[in-house]
Length: 447
Image: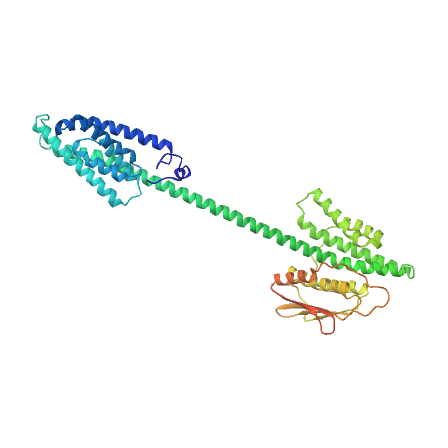
């Protein structure tokens, strides 16, 4: 028989082939009722056949008890019911057997053949019995009653259980199909949920990488210049007070710029209007610069105070600020040569910001690894792209005053490469033949 998903879920909880004890008790009750019916009908059959009544009774009990296996072998139950039809017994067994057969997932031609055999067997037996009864004078109706009784009786005992069984079987198969479809949809939803979680984790990872890259770009350049100026301030504080004051002012300006850019970047992470988040960002921003500008604590504190009162600035740096960026490096003692080729024009905000960050990070690397080296910054505006190159000569030999040591995380070149590749550009970096270092990038103008 067709079993539902619930029956599958409760499989092996009943005896033998039954899935549940309730089904076993129900079939046992039907078998007892069928055995009692066949035993009662076996008595007149034994009397008419001239055999002992005990034999007829035992035959009826055995034939009726076959109904117990209706779920396991429904075809056998129907065949036994057809076989005992001439003895006018097994009506309950025939009805239940046809119903069970119709609910099974058997070929329709098999069900139709067995149902037809039962129909014609019942029709013939009924025709003969009614004709004999009319011949004995039990009925005084016309001859038309014999075929009418045979047809109606056979149809009444065959059609209802067959049609009901077909309906129940179709409904069970439909419910099982719907349940399987629901299980499939649930598995698909689980798979989609897992994929969504993977995508969310990937997005979080990408966002963490982006934030780390932004933090590196914002802090590294400003703080590197601040450290250089702080070292210069320490060297000339006693010899040249005016230059010391100038360097302190430069440190303050760079601190304010670093804090402003930090606030702009961290503002992306802010939930609208949360005071706690604002205070936390201001504390992080205010604590960033003093950690690296220990030698100029007073100037950094003043810069932090002024930066906290300033509103959020622009969306990000652009190529228009490139000259100022180069000027800051020049003010820190670096010899920088800026060359711009082609007609300047406006690009997308992300393109200009990426180009600015590439030049900024390249200059930062010069401060870190080649202090005092002459540097060439070239920017070329082309028809379909914008190209930039930062190349420095070998650093000069410094016998006196050890160079300022700046920490390096090794992520600067990686961050530049990721930025340029994200816009479909090309990034190349490496040492030159003369002992210097070159950083080159080309970004499509319509990226």
